[in-house]
Amino acid sequence: MLTGLQGGYTKFCCFLSEWDSRAKEKHYVVKTWPKRMSLIPGVKNVKEEPLVQSEKNILPPLHIKLGLMKNFVKAMNNDGGGFQYLKTKFPRFSDVKLKEGIFVGPQIRELVKDSNFESTLNEAEKRAWTAFVEVCHNFLGNKKKEDYREIILELLSSYKALKCNMSLKIHFLDSHLDFFPANLGAVSDEHGKRFHQGILHIEKRYNGKWSEAMLSDFCWSLCRETPIENMKRKKTTK
Image (cartoon, rainbow, N blue to C red; front, side, top):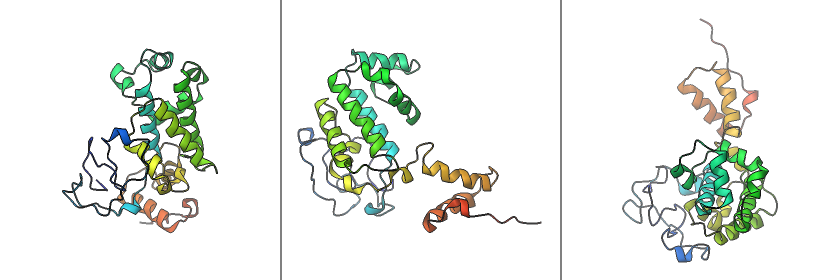
């Protein structure tokens, strides 16, 4: 909605470049794609006028993580030990949900901490999983390691070896790495990250009651770059 692009599996789904999602023979091979010069409704899968300028969009870390997890699981051997372990680890998952790799943040964190899972993977899966964990810890968090580019390259190489389909989220890492902000933890909507920590203080100030002004206060605190802890809401007397 923000970018004005069509939803679903479209040919040109990137708002930064004219990446062809269906040219699979070029995926993991071509890194530089023609830049999108404009977003005109009716042209190359643009549905409506974008609500914000392309350079002001934020690539959400949580959705990148979920996308990487999804492509990893979909590329796993369904008869292998790793996939069978996921069935026992998450018994409430339906077969369809598991095969599609539909996980949420807490489940991924739980799996990252589970050393038994890694021991059930084959060599290609283990390499891709190790690279995924490295990206989660050293790129998608509050701090980027100095060698984050090498970490991303290893992820892409291992995913290619595992024959993971390149999704839009993987494409962002492959071709638009410089577009990511320096501190991804600050813009993440994952539970426990900066957004939830900040909005928690606002909710306390409003005593847990919903108000349109509450969200406005939070947005203004971001614009002012003023720590929320230093702001106090004046009590109104009747």
